[in-house]
Length: 407
Image 1 (cartoon, one colour):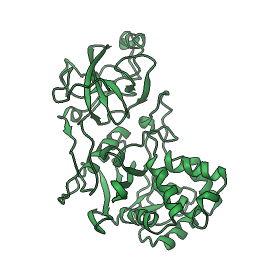
Image 2 (cartoon, helix red, strand yellow):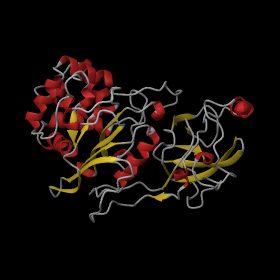
Image 3 (cartoon, rainbow, N blue to C red):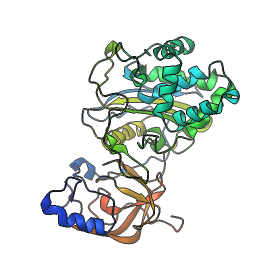
Image 4 (cartoon, rainbow, N blue to C red):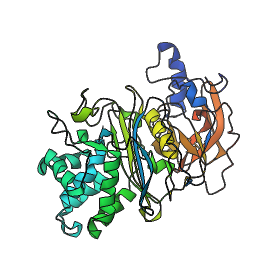
């Protein structure tokens, strides 16, 4: 546990009566972060970001309790640099939206499609909009889309949703190696205008998905741009909510059943996938598919997937500069300036690990029993969080530089 002098948890949204006075203090300060209990693991020392991904082979570091399928393909050499359970099948969640887009564009030029389809594809690929996927799934044959794409792309592990779940596109079975094949098809075989249309939108992936989940995990957090991503998540509550609005009610995405699909594909455990390309010229194709223990929070899965992705040998990938730290609390605010007020950018997934680029003094913040005037700058969010919610016992982080004026 963290020392009581700094980081003992204070309040939760279900605050007992005896703590209402402290809650009132928080409301008076207009501080939006409601603290949650945090694990002792969050107090571990900072993880330094690598400067560059090494070309030396190394084993993927899969966190305890996580089931993973991994494939990394170097397009420059035509070889895999990583393969771990690459043929294992996972439910696709939103990764199947790549197949929906390819199927629709198979005999169409992006330049000639209706404006409504252009808008749907844009939202589906950039912001992972489910309503757009529902449209293509219901309009163009549902499971038949998957069957067509298996034949067209030469997929070997992919399968439509199991019997009884034909309407659930997110239950399509997919593997890491088939995911690499899909990206190779987009980059190397698809018509140039189709390739450019899809990849441009994956490069413009929004941090906040259309359902307000923070989708810049895995590849998008582990590597500096250029990258392009299509992410997937399923069976998490709204602990991933981002954006300047309030948290949305808890719900699950892409189904609520507890069942095993065809070929034993798990339809129950929380799934979090990161797929895409990394490096200039889309040098490396990366596919990391993961399942997490029941009850895992979005922030914990986000952190574990990040650690796994950062451990991979990804040619052409460059890691961002900074130190990785755990956080604690719920709805922790990221602000444009190191001060409270009308400057909210987004909120962190509860308990997520973040990259800290620098720190500076700002407005004094009180979250009883803590008071601190140091703020951490998170380059991947473009804003600041109070150091109160960084998992370290000191007010000022000892190994993080001071911010320059540009921050």
